[in-house]
Every structure is written in C-alpha cells, then in structure tokens.
Image (cartoon, rainbow, N blue to C red; front, side, top):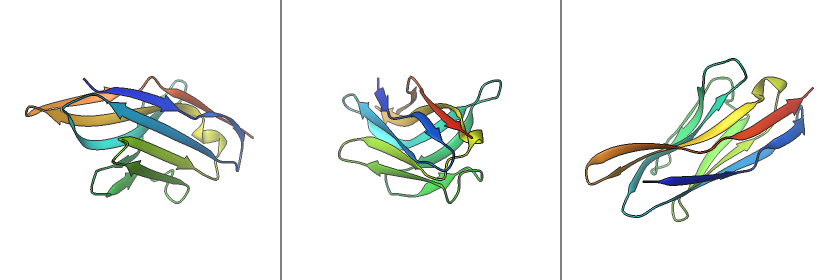
Length: 119
C-alpha cells in the first residue's frame, strides 16, 4: 500500500502564494499518476491538477495560469505551486496517487491540508 505524506498549506492573503508537497512511500509499486484535489466546505471534492510520470499535466479551468503541478520522480514527490491565490481557493487540499502493483490498481489519498485565503 502506498502511503502519502503531505506538507504545506496554511493561511495566506489574496494574491499570495503557497506550495504543497506530497511524498509517496512504499515498495514494489509503480506510479501511474499523481495529483491534487480540493474540497471546500459544503462542496464536493474536485480535481485541481494531475500529472503523469511522462510530464503531461491536466488542470481545472479555475486554476489554469495560476497553479503549477510538478513531480520529482526520483523522490516520488508531487508539488503544487499556487500563485495569485483567491479566497475561492480556500479548501482542504488532498494529494492523490494512482499506482499499480502486480497488475492491480490502487488509489491512495493524503490526509489533507488546509489552505485558507483571506480577502
């Protein structure tokens, strides 16, 4: 089973920046994709950004041009650089990793980290 450890997050003023990190650990698995989701209070969890080992990325329209997802494949760590933050970006952000081992597919979630953007 893949374990995820998130870091980053916190309180920032509108227009500011934050960086989230998520490190995956475990043995014998191959990572298929890594990404970030978020869940605002009273809303459903939504995709923020994903990246695959080859580098292809996918972003929610609401964060395009402001957020950048990147990965260090050697460290099995995914990052989310968030710039020009808006109050509507306030949410709990969850790291998500899809992996495979012995031809089985797995999805792991991080514990979540709070991002609060004040106006």
